[in-house]
Length: 405
Ligand code: MLT
Image 1 (cartoon, rainbow, N blue to C red):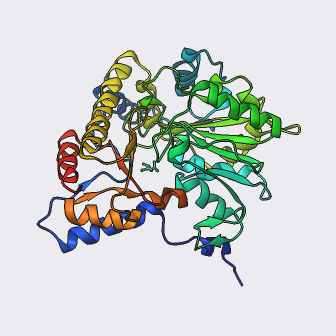
Image 2: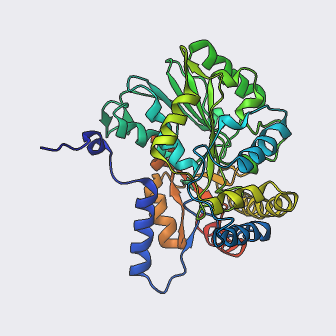
Image 3: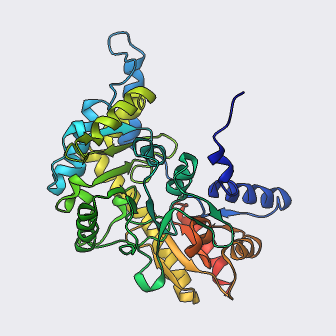
């Protein structure tokens, strides 16, 4: 008789963004006359920039000719893309990453969920609280998190690092020593960042405790302040303790195109076992690579024209962040984030819970955001808005929300 993976039964409710999407659909179905503005999931709205469209067209044409047709991609991804990444994302910042340390994938969500597969089940994970839900849920599915306490919203075998107003909504070193530490800077959902000196403390801590950092840098393109690191490898010693996850979704508008990569330095070892070798084995066995066409589009991100075009696209979204942050602050909301990240983290009003505020904002302003409590217990009483909407919708949504206070 077959058996299911019972760890899945421990997951409370559905995936956060599925629940938010369902509530939005239900509201729209019940109120077809209302113009609902979605500032919930961090999904981009601007079209692909011309140099990327051109690269996609060119690659499609190549696939249509016998002499340039390609089948399966190389296990780690095409060399042209990995070289562009190594020089554009790392060498340009004084960091030496070898192309064999870069694994191309179809996005950081999958990588952040899958990476735990090469790690033992008896590892204890530490996460920011609130946190991008994939880190916790994927560890629940693997059976690493213990039991769930519905009253506190916490797992018995997870170290929570609260991200609160008093620590600038960024995690600080945990009291209990974990084996694996998930860090996301610029942070999703709070939009907080750390300076290079602060990140260096995490790296030193991980090396001292022999812990592994899984560093999600999906939002690095949104960094505007010069003392904020763009990659964990800017810190000394990071290559012996950190894996870095990167995405093309937010810096190049690829949420529907799908492309990302993971960096695992060769120096990163558990005893004498190389994590790079384990992930290469896993990648080769379970993954057939991002499409050639998409990898060519990814290469175009690093071209001079691509860079210029994408700088403007990022600036467009960050202008939305400013509209949200300044508009809500003027109205009297307590807001943070939005300076080095496309997310604005705001406190609910009148003591409402995050879900009460979600319903209130949807009902009264017809705006969809994401309830902070969906990201973890310390997110209760908070609400996240994304800057990835169109400018026009963002302005309208904020005008409507200003009237709520
Ligand atoms: C978010 O809204 O947190 C992200 O867009 C979700 C994701 O990247 O998977």
